[in-house]
Length: 374
Image (cartoon, rainbow, N blue to C red; front, side, top):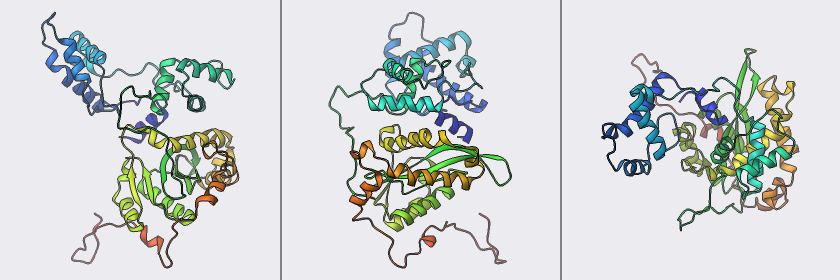
């Protein structure tokens, strides 16, 4: 998946698909309806077959969804009968190339309102947002668009009507460093060494029990080479966590990260796909960053990566860590850390952390004593 597509998905936009991906999607759609195409008109049993197909789980090209609604299957079947295989190609969005429907600051406000009052319907969430006076007058919030936004953030989950083995109760560890969670958020552009603007990525670690940020940094990439130095700095500042809870991206599945965690005795835990609830605290902190930090940035704060990170840590240490937190019964993250950091595991004397974090590669020594590049 390209970086451009990942950025669009993180923003909640529908990605612009290349021709190869569009063809894969069309083939996938045809594969689901192929056995229905030649059914005779009026033949019974169509809807039963559609419901049966809708109950299955699929790996859908260009999407993170795993199911297809019966009505969607019927629409694909009708489209194929009208226009053949070409009719199954995904159509470009009418608003392609325009600004996304919901600006980020408005999306954060909607999510905050829903999180504060989960019982509110989508319509009431929109009304509450309008009542704050923070919405642009020209902005129209379509209920379906807001519903998708809240669903993507795990805020539209209904209580199960039948017994279930999934425990959705809120949970927090008691002691500092029992669990760290980490994720990446897209940040503002900064002026790089070549005087050109470059996109940044906020790599952050959050302690589950105290909400303390062991370390966070803006980087110019979100790969393993950027993530491991951030983890190293977090350990230097706050000790060694017992568990590290991360996403399923390639960065967190890397051999290097698994090796470092194994050497330090850290249990590496990967989030279950399609369950955003497990990353709720991290996502809430990212929303706080967007609302309280990014919205207040000045031009000087983005003149370099170093300037942006100085501004970040000034905010983290002087404001965020010292502000009473609703999830901590009114305590500040630093107060909660001081109360629960008795068992924090620190680096043993003589432990060379730099050596532990060295990247390891297997290379072949040639007969002329040179080392192969692969």
